[in-house]
Amino acid sequence: MSYAKEANRVLENYRRQSQIDLENREKEVFEKIEGFQDAFIRKNKLGYEYIKANIKSEENKARELEKEIQDVEDKLTKMLLLNGYPKDYLKLKHHCDKCQDTGVYNNTICSCKRTIMVNIAREKSSLNEQMKSENFENFDIDVFDDTVNPGFPISQKDYMANLANYLKTYSQNYKKGDKSLILYGPVGVGKTYLLSSMAKEIIDRGYSLIYLSALQLIKRLFDIRYKNFNEQPKTEIEDLLYDCDVLMIDDLGTENSTDNNISLLFDLLNDRIQRKKTTIISTNIDIEDLSSQYDARISSRIKGEFEPIRFFGRDIREKRFNDDYGIRNS
Ligand SMILES: [Zn+2]
Image (cartoon, rainbow, N blue to C red):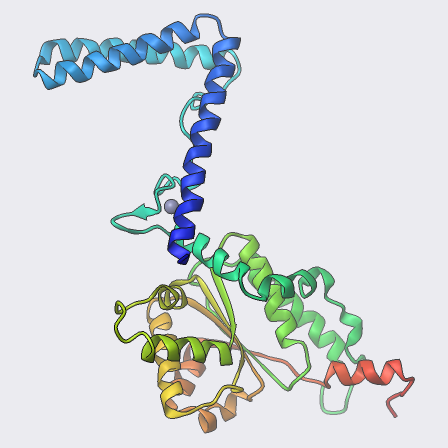
């Protein structure tokens, strides 16, 4: 089943549940407030007559009925308030007020439906598992080296504590269209861990986010461009890659950077930049060396639009190994 169809099912359930919830609230109020149900039925009857009058173009009658309906409505609202209920207690409540859980807003797909689709896509990916262990809560600062090396004012441990804090704040305050970031530095210094931690924060706050390794991303883009020749111009997954609130690309530079792949990647990044969509990249390539692996278009785009977040230090896997085996730094 396509993501869109699965999302429609979710929305259908939302609508059904809203209706059930409303009926339960009505039942509750009918039982608790004396005379409420009679007035409620009367209002519905008047509403029906009002429609009839309108169809028959009986303007005077319609106007009278309108006033009568208003009176009954006022009475009902007063009864609710007097009994301690909010005045909108008997209104249908939707998950999304924009589209009222139809998935369509302004003749186009509503952002809530897109979020549902992204969530479905993610449930089928490995990110869910990854986020369970790799998140800010489990972040262990003690795996980092606390020695201060010559030429650098603070230890890797202190540096990482600050960095993690900065990225945590960014994710916890994330708003649509926030600046793009590029996390760069050598292998094994915690970039992927922090990327996953950020993903969890941002997703938990309801934004649509896609997380892919550069390798997976290129494969997807390639398939979209060259395998779906006869399909519609924009496939569902392409739509998600271009339109999700946050696109995370892990390990940029490990993919095959052929001219073809570079242009696929450039089109995507450029489109997202132009439409103020956030992209967060991690890479082992130093910012200054980007242009040696990618052409000037990509490297200048990244340098111009992404905030560089530098990681440094020794590979923590190596430190763990040394600790485990009692090997000390000299
Ligand atoms: Zn919506």
